[in-house]
Amino acid sequence: MRRIRAAAVGAVTLSFALTLAACGGGSSGSEGSNEQPKTLTYWASNQGANLEVDKKVLQPELDKFEKETGIKVRLEVVPWADLLNRILTATTSGQGPDVLNIGNTWSASLQSSGALLPWDAKNFEAIGGKDRFVESALGSTGVQGQDPAAVPLYSMAYALYYNKKMFADAGIEKPPTTWEELAETGRKLSKDGKWGLGAEGSNLSNNIHQVFVLGKQHGADFFTPDGKADFTSDGAVAAVKQYVDLMATDKIVAPGNAEYAQNQSLSDFAKDKTAMVLWQTASATFKAQGMKDDEWGVAPAPVQSGEPGSGKATNSMVAGINMAVFKNTKNIDGAKKFVKFMTSDEEQVVLNKAYGSIPPVKAAQQDPAFNGPALSVLRETLATSASALPQVPEESQFETVVGTAVKELFADAAAGRAVTTESVRAKLEKAQQQMPKK
Image (cartoon, rainbow, N blue to C red; front, side, top):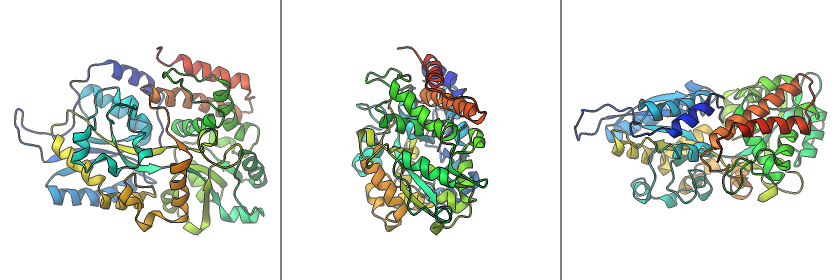
């Protein structure tokens, strides 16, 4: 659920090259005093349909934390379009929060900056232990073999959501399971000003999530085992072309979707303008858009053939939000208390229920709220057929440059320009040239 500005590339490279000894949190305190400040600054990511939804969800919980601990939390909900750049600026200026949310795919990139508190055994013990968390969620908290840079907060997975009324009106009895079936189903639904599938061509992160999964299905990872960018392999090219061809060749995605940003495709879906959308944990957004639970269905995201699973049958990235602490915060104890509170069994139920996501805390997953049909599909996906994006320091640059390449190819498709294997490879070659040389 994230978008990243192209400007982030330079910012990432710059920030990671600098010494970060000066970075720190936003709490105020007496210079030279051992007294812990009674406030924390928290940057929350935009998880709801809009920023106001997040404030309504979070503020009562922050008030509860203050009542329990005496520590006031100053909340700012930051849009995904701004969040990475805000974090990078904070790592170099020292003018940042104490605690923040990060997209789990950024974990390795931000870990390499040295700005975040490492979650070693002692720090995990302070929040109840590492073994409380689901293994798949821990797999997207930083580079393997290093102490995690963050703690899982919300877990998500991609699925295919479909509009039941539009399917019934078209005489379609069940959702597609393969990409060929999706294209065929989408063509039946793309008529009378309505479209089979929604996409968000200007949403760089969503572009990456979709082509990463398709890359796995074509045997590509976008990085070599030693961490070098590998954007122009036959599998990577095939993945990007297949995704853009949903508009360019299959013509089941409206040309206007080339300019869509975060949640615009979900709005069309809720308004019966689009029959299907590939999204991560979308139920809360549908509800906020005025859609009733019985008006939509959910099925596993498509594969090339057969059923979802591992390897080439991967059908989702391991999506989610992590919680991190700037290690030079003036209130390290308070920050860890806040992380412990937000990842407690009780709060995990409250927060993930509000957002329609899945708790990465094992005990919280047992709550009946997470056993409904929709979340069961997502839980099964996370357990059996999801793969973590590459946990490499350059992951955030990858999202920016390849996400932008896909955006430009969608613009070509919308304008009626041919999208060919050669043009896709050229865009990906340009993207690869923008990556740091190893």
